[in-house]
Image (cartoon, rainbow, N blue to C red):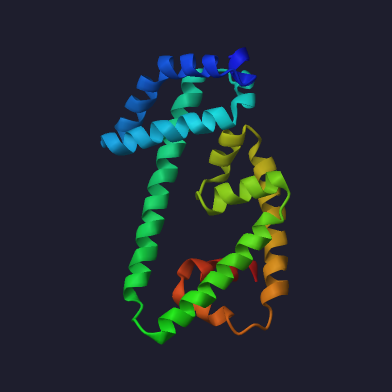
Length: 195
């Protein structure tokens, strides 16, 4: 574990060989699909490598791996459901010039939201993205980042306050706002929450 946290690739390969079967089996418990379970295994080890510096503070590696697999599976399923909702909305939009115009305006709204999030401090941005894009709860984020729920709550409050002010400042009075709301319910929800 000491070598792994310092970025030793051979130690990581050995760790992978010793644990990947258990990670795959844990993913299969939830998914019952070999292709998706393999994708989850890959995502889990990418996350482990990306956050290897945190691994020395882990008390139970088995528990940590199981929680990481569970959260990765849930994130994956949430993304699938969100994509299905987006496709369902798109199928309800009639074709024609209005659709093209609305699509362009929706892209501008998304770009503005992305700009505001990109200006957040690193930790606030990480917490905000886990909460908004991966739809993780405060507790899940705290487990994932190994911080307290109160820390997560504070980072999220500060991030949302900044995003709200940024969006309000840049969109106030612009005519493209209503089109964003009509096309994409999640953009409407974002505006209602922030403005």
